Length: 391
Image (cartoon, rainbow, N blue to C red; front, top):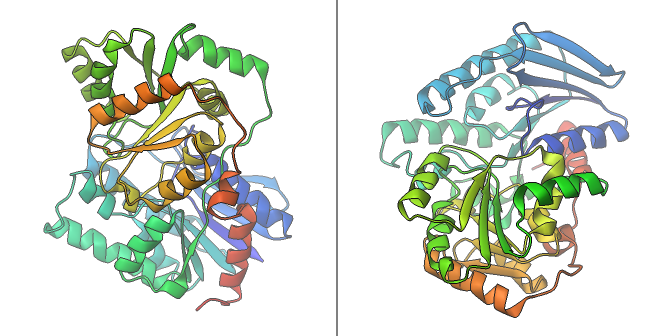
């Protein structure tokens, strides 16, 4: 079987989807299939083809990195990429395709319409843009984007998402139950490395302090400002140090809030490469995961599995009805929840954890708690799509 992976990111850069895609590709190769990927490269000026081995070929398409602050320019760049994808593999034949979640999925699906396609929905667009305050549901732009995504769902042989909350949202958007599947993301796997652990501890953790850590994107969907404002309440305890690691559209705004509040217990740092992530989560006293209200219905942070599996306390700032967090809380006593818009409640929860001093512990496997899954699940679903063995 010949499988086309249409990838919406530059896999040479550090990003949350890189290990997921690599694991999926290896899984389908283990089952005897061949893979062709079409993917972006911001670091090259001409398209190129790389033959990885007899079963894997990469079409690397030269793309200009768009301005992240200009939503319109980013979308136009994505549309140019759609055309590049179509031209690059126009003479190729495939049994099945994998389409990665993206804002331009409707256009990608239009040229893939003759190939049975598995549509992997990691973010539900444009509903996430609505919750982030970028688009109004009444605006013509929102309606056009929603119609294009609906076309993508309709044409896909299978729609696979990453949480029960997102599956429920897709049902509300009209995707038939029999077309939907949930495969939870798995964490990035690394062998223990003492040097990497020491690098992380020296860079981010203060000896003798109770270290509260947020690591990840600081964007419209993350509500990191809730943690910044919580730091103001935490000043009552001089032993607590808050570290926010990462970058994104709202980092400067968060830094401005910290400066305005004169927070000497909070510092910002840049993200290290992904291989260090396990040591970020395993060595903090409390890990924080924040989401803007409503976003848990449309997305789930890629670090969810890694934070859960680290054996350290994790506070998820999400709505009370988030099914994924409810399930984790029932299975793991180190999981806590706060309202995403209540910095005082977040501060109180951090102080409670510090006072109770829960010990690091082995916790139930993340995938076993939610659903026992792996990259093999994607390989089997792609095989079903190729056989058209789907409703």
